[in-house]
Length: 360
Image (cartoon, rainbow, N blue to C red; front, side, top):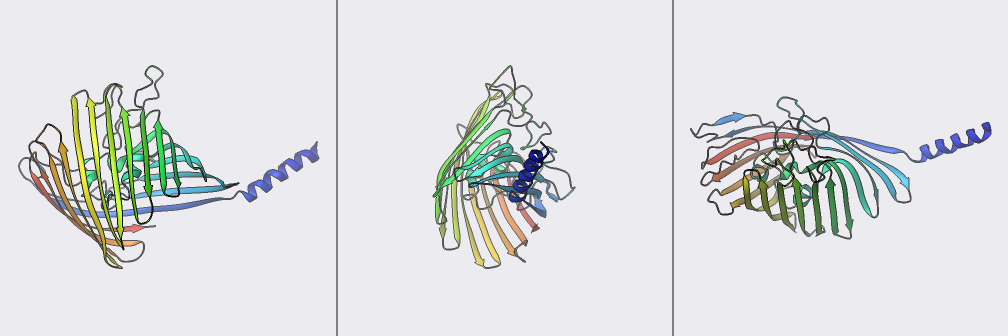
């Protein structure tokens, strides 16, 4: 009996020795100073250090893999966002608000469980040349750089350029702390199976030279949820089409986001179009520029945006950057140029920003 137990322990020890885990610690610290005008009806200006983002949101993360044999690996990601201006945690004051997932990865793709980025986030990554910049399309639709789902099952696979993925959330957002990443819709209700559910899907073809994809995203509300989605019959639906083309080292990116919101306050529909270019002026200097337009259907409350950003790489990990932008609001539109900021209704807002970013 003792010999059998000793043998079993030896086998377990051998298996543990062969299946070593690899854990990577990584992160970004990005601090900036921005000045924008027309922050209210009086046309006042403000100079500030942004909390949400500079050129990239600050974060620290842990990513791990374990080879299970036969082409199968266990994977996990724990990623925490924070504001470098105060050191406060982001994403609704969550410890791992950017990602907290565990899964399995094989030739068939990756299956994950937990809080994770969903297909709307993934769909725009290569087409949106400015990404989560302080002045960018994320200012027009704050959900785009914050498209994550709590309590979610996710899948993503790439088969010789054909990309397919989906997520399904039983309760899309458990935090009620406020902001675009915390909308107070915990879900997982035994009484109402549709409450706070969310489904996203992605299908596309992507290679180094070019790519195009389409995504679908529909999330439901519940009592107490933000943005007027106070019932499971309320929903917010986005359909995107995105593409990128490489011309040597220059990347062109474009896309459209069709959105319909059925909230307690009524039904609204809009289309967000964007077009951008990222061009390396030399090995150390890159120019990014983007124009965008939000068209609110059956309304004159439209918005146009134009942004240019210049990034100088001091090294492979550290960069200086500066950006100029304008957000032109029509009618009663009051979309701020800077993500998380404010703007006077119907006013054009101009801004300038400079910052320093370090990857580790």
